[in-house]
Amino acid sequence: MIAVDCREFLISRRSIRKFEPKEVPLELVLKAIEIARYAPSAKNVQPWYFVIVRDREKMARLAKIHPGAKPLENASLAIVVLADSYASPVSYLVDGAIAATYLWLALHCLGLGAVWIQTLRNIEEVRNVVNAPQNLVPVAILAVGYPAEKPEPKPRKSVEEITFFEEYGRRNP
Ligand SMILES: Cc1cc2nc3c(=O)[nH]c(=O)nc-3n(C[C@H](O)[C@H](O)[C@H](O)COP(=O)(O)O)c2cc1C
Image (tube, rainbow, N blue to C red; front, side, top):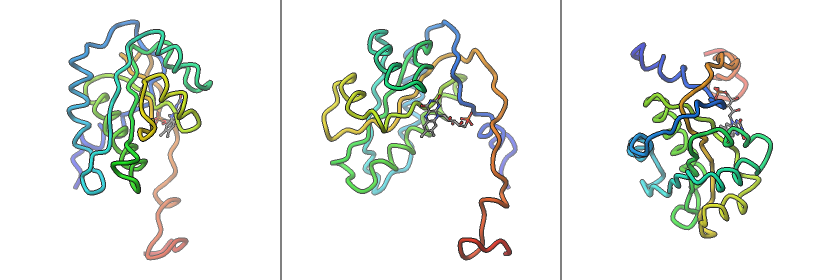
């Protein structure tokens, strides 16, 4: 049986796009990364790096990569999650996405709010902002800060809708 508070913790995470104008201490961010590094990865290669961006000029450049990146304008900081395509040529995107998810949950665990900012149409631009070499692919930017909103949960598909038995399409166990 799943402990109730564990379920509550997981389902209480939200995308937070509005932040208090209050600085997040670096120690808290490092604590979140300390947790995120326990993410699983293929062959335990851990092909990820986290770039903490607090420089407002860099943040402004990241906020302009596309309209959905706007939450970076009022975030306290950004964390760019980089995945190493040389270190893990098959699984780097999956591993990087898992690490970004762990980081998001770790931030939530520490009372911080965050939203995942899409990077995959703007790889070169994001790479340039953080001066990353070609083998490192930015898989996500997390905009991070103290939450200034409490969004309602977004609707989710039902278990019945997404679950099959033995083969795709079979609804009966
Ligand atoms: C791969 C990925 C890309 C996303 N890109 C953006 C984005 O660019 N801007 C944004 O505001 N939210 C973005 N989101 C957040 C989603 O919109 C959000 O997770 C989804 O609507 C469910 O809401 P919830 O996170 O509050 O549960 C992204 C999430 C994921 C996983």
